Length: 401
Image (cartoon, rainbow, N blue to C red; front, side, top):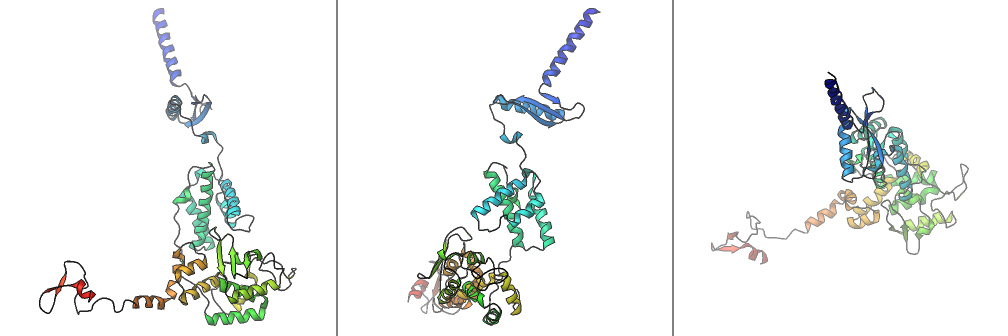
């Protein structure tokens, strides 16, 4: 009896030892919680702990980590890293935009909304579907145009791209969010009759703003380019304006016609010839003559409304500049350079305004080729037609004659 008891005790001891070896490194941090953890030494000998889930998952994860340690593989550095919030990525994007893009704002307006929507979320937990859902919701509420949606989506993508470069996140979910189709085909430009009415209103109510109006209409500068322009970038002798950093980041040069030169001379007369070009012509609202302006919105919108011109903004003056060049027969490549477009596709939006140029192009084909009735124009080596003597005649020889 004693022998059997001793043998049973030995068997149980072996089973307990085997169970302990099998469960080594696997433990329940809070007994009875059902959540199991693992403890192991990585390839560098550093002790680590990881939450696994169920006991079976913990055993599998423990074996995997032990195998990685034996193979000398280092674990990802993010395994114990504190979660990076989306607001952190946005902050980096704001700093980057302030240094590399044209902006006078201390904080980009897109950043404020994005932080409000997703700021407290871990950046690596946000999915493409969630980005689209949040932006679509705001787009419906604020009646965004597709272009506005795309700008916010691009800013999210910039934030994640910088996060990847800074090793804060590993993927960019915004890349999988589809852009919305923008309707860029519609071009609003100023007709001669509309210009007469608008010019009369400006002359009567805002005479000091006529030079700004003429400069925009005869240079095609973007509003930001015009209202950030300084006299150091204006060369009246060479009749040229230099934009040190355009919308696309490069330098561009704008030639000046007589109207633009006259407008600049009038603007220089009200200032010191140094500093900002766009300054106040008359004192008011607590500002003296020569105070730098940042936008024409204060007076232009009122002038357009009084002139009875519908759906017209300051940017439409830029469209008018390009449209008039095209209608004057200027080559699209030259228009592209004058407008500072990055691609010719942007300039081709104005091509329909020069139908006569296209008609002249196809008219040059009149008189080419041979008209022989109902014969086809096939010009292969094996095709011929019957002459008056019923002999095959080479079509190419006829064409040369």
